[in-house]
Image (cartoon, rainbow, N blue to C red; front, side, top):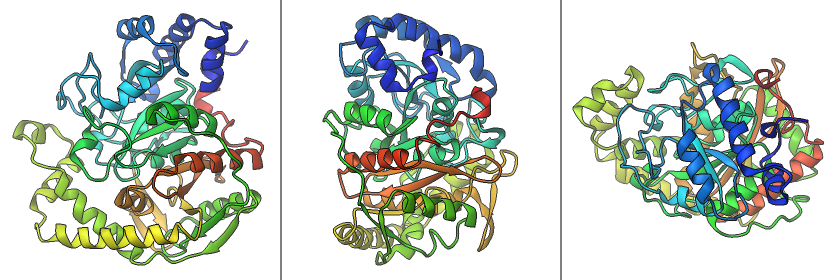
Length: 439
């Protein structure tokens, strides 16, 4: 018999509901696997043994009853303050809004998912808990900032995880680790006890094995049913420059092939002012970092400290300029999403780079992974709309490749329809692949 952690989240929930597997047995087997396997991966540096047992005892009979999950360090829990990848308690212990919704569905939090320090990086190389590793190749980045969530799900240590997404922080690690990553619509859940409460970009995100698992998690998080419909015949708009043209050709080719194999209607489109999206995002988000205590600032890694200081020194005149661009882009994207169902491009322009050298080579030249990753992902954060990364292939080195879809406001369900249709079109070849770490 296979280990319960090798099952999908849906299978775990169904087995518990039918009585084929006790919730206690599922919890204990999850804790056992995390303790036995995660030391090298470093996806879940804090494990809640006693707290999770208490939570299971009190768990309501919801659709996720007894299903273990992890929660990114950006969310406060009733028994633990949120630390945002640092050594400091930055949001006091409380039942944060997103946690409450998942708890009310019966989910049991078994640990803190590792994350990039302060959420300020797309690689997962910097954290108070140490770097996260990619289960497909341990010397590669897991992504950030929700790298621990993606790595843990990919490695079959956990079936689902709550992450967040301020500039791709769910979709980027999902792409690197070969799992589904869903960024929900901005403001769709209560933000109390969540670091996203202090920004105009951040939204909770979900990491799951496949579209079906993401659907049950998203339905619980949003507290509304996301009924499945057909994902065939969708109209997909692609913006060639720079999102496709300046990506690794192998990544771009595999993403395009996935859409062709799905039978979707693909056409080139133009979103007005999109060429300014990256600059507007960077100009606005640095102003939202805020002031940090000298003690916290001194404790940060050099790359994170440099980003914080750069934000503190950024002229205030950049903010209203960025906001004007942001408003124009929101309008033009909304108009385009009345013509097509989704806008699409590769989730990340390359596969996961090396942990000790997180730079990438694009047709335009060599650059940091952070700059190129955020360029691909920031449009959904500027606009507040939902977006998803779906595994669609692997490169010649066997590293995962993700396709990103951007949807109209509140259309999480259609994104999941698309994900499940893609999975059927390739016979689940990429969501059922098992990384070397988990074999």
